[in-house]
Length: 432
Image 1 (cartoon, rainbow, N blue to C red):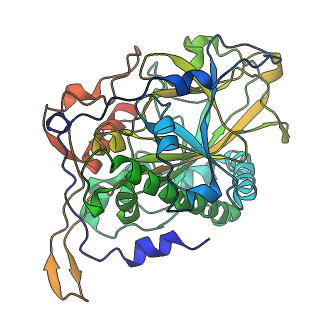
Image 2 (image 1 turned 45 degrees about the vertical axis):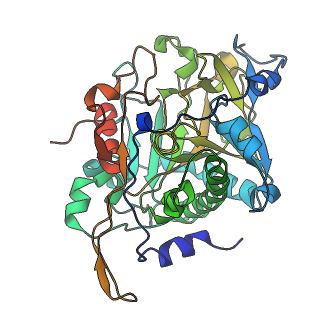
């Protein structure tokens, strides 16, 4: 596969950046979506042979074969609309991606070894300045209840760029994106190689997904060449990978969390552009097993308010739309709230879970650059998001969800970095 990262980095100095302003209320509304026939036809009636059952329908994600995805002449608009459009689940998956199964396994198998490192070693991998958004994080993020999340540990890094910037001001202003990666070079050197390899692959495939998203959106709204999702992701330096390890529990009832559908990961909507996901790996005593509870997994709240369980294959890469893309696409591509339910019952005891997500996002900020080839100074603007009361963004109706829109004046605009910092204030300690 040709390297898309090389293109994105070597072309970075060219003057193709523009201000991303959007006022959705002033734009023409998307055409009426088709009836929700695609959603209903994918409902399955699986037999629940494991330890608990879900009263909610189980839906298979829309799938696109890799050979079709990489064909720029292929018309994938129907599948893009079915997965990401107003009637979709906000998720689709890519099948038959070369090398993905081995790269997934290589990284996920390292999560338990990382979590088992001595506490003093993991302490060295923490980065409080970024609010633990680089390196190791455990017990720093708040659950819906407001309690620290001790159920899982996370390792964050940018799989494409180790040092996004050396600008001191930017590092202080946007520490969760502008900081440098922290790798356990002595304690677990193979982690860096495996993390970057899987993250790079998911990014490259994500760019292909973004290209076809742009083709779909461009049929309904006017787009400049540099305003599409693919270009936004190519020029960004703040993509973030997250390796997650869910610790095994002796008693896996998780009843104390109340809402069992978010007992492993609380209800939320991704605020970035596009999120790439792997299917989870489950182990008991270091031996890989299938999920011990068929009711466990990813749950999504649809636009109609229905809660469904979404499934995709072990060797597929799933992609979810984030809020930023919903804003910039004027609602042609839609983000959905989702959470992760933990397995329950005796069979789920002493079972751990590993997974990986790559959050693909706009650049936090672009400052002035000197283009030697064109020999002139030009201004690169911030990636702006303009909010309107009409935008269906971050309005989950669950009790624990704080409506971020209460903090954003109507018709005001923020850079993506500013928007992210406001969200991080919600889940972590506010910066002082």
